[in-house]
Length: 187
Image (tube, rainbow, N blue to C red; front, side, top):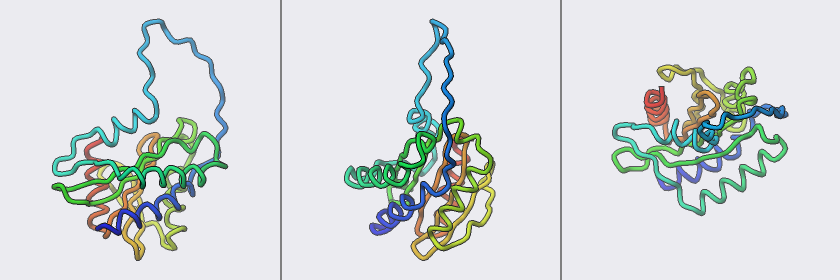
């Protein structure tokens, strides 16, 4: 599976920006109570909601630094015209019993972007279009998802609140298994 993570990054990064709606944030000024806890950042929420869940038999690991840096550069370039609504990119490798299983991409959207109608569908359609494939609807056990199969592997994509999530695996069974495990662990 050494080639799969590289193919996954190339595919997912090329595809990630395709479905983001352009949203201009509206500034709001709300006085916080003096005893208020700091609001978690999108990055902290992503870490808690996706990568901080217990998934029996699975574990998240960081991708090598070189791949992380390359992914972030490509993502910034791909989303630069979309403004602040595109959100923060997080990538992790998903292992099963210690063996590489899938690559997971998560984009934390602003609340305004996430609330746009059809953002999850647009994300999946963008992934499918770039892969010269079609997105097939799938029930992930609590959330609607999309399966995109291509020669390079299978992407399963879904929206979970303000997060756009995509898994890339070498085949459909692994991709769907990874996605369902993640959804079940987070709901």
